[in-house]
Image 1 (cartoon, rainbow, N blue to C red):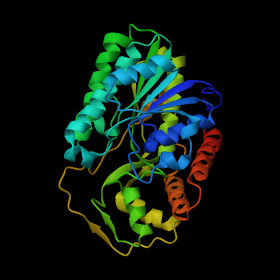
Image 2: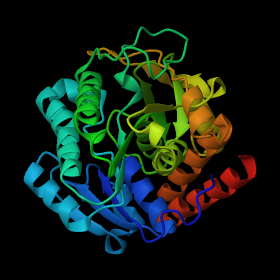
Image 3: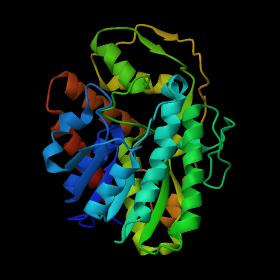
Image 4: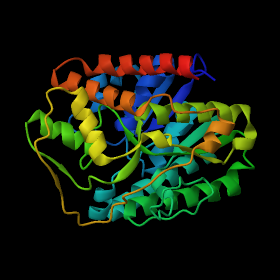
Length: 358
């Protein structure tokens, strides 16, 4: 299935639409002709990718807290969405150690409120609930985790996401197998990167901020291996899952991994080195390992065979292409060029590659 007009004129609620993933998804759905309704309590970073896109006037924007059930239910009842993508979250491991209460409230209670809001709407609606690759009990082994593997969480963030999935499974079995107008899919993505990510304590944002000021790059764990993936790869999985759910009701309630192939699993040092290759003004004069005061997994991989089999999803970009897109976006930003233009350009480029390579 190639994305064409499936979302045209459809009402789509995106929670967390001002965040990194949410802003890219909002832009993509605008290109596809959807009527986007966004719910987010703030612009979580400065700079803000969402602000740079200049799309606020093209969507219905709600500045609301996902933890406020009364408000969320009112928005759902008013707009009667055809599709829902729940991305709102406290997404950072380090922040979860600093503020575990807000992390659990946002990630668990926020998900619960979305489910409650879905429970009371009467129109047909397909929802994709995005959790994380970190929901798995991670033994830091080389095999990729399957959707049937045990959930867990060594840190507050991971535990909050795994807990949200337990709530989700409970609601699906208790309410949504009986409520025929609602279809739900669960999406677990890997370590996504892309232009416009300005989050604290994230590899790429930390590097580009340092390089822009000619500062030394400090890496917390240079040998940590991650399945690096461009943000558009996972978003393409979310969009596909939502459409496939409508066509195959047997997928209702199922979880799907959207992770890159083994060829895209590299250590942190390799990613930083390749970024420097594509961004010619970058020179790494020194890399030092920072002391870490919290647990951070050194190895985490996903097995995405289920998504490949049932959704016909696959990764489109090579690791080298992924890093080049990321480097091009940030170089464009620091050259003070239009961030909106390059974002929409890269989405169109990805869609053209999707058509050619699938």
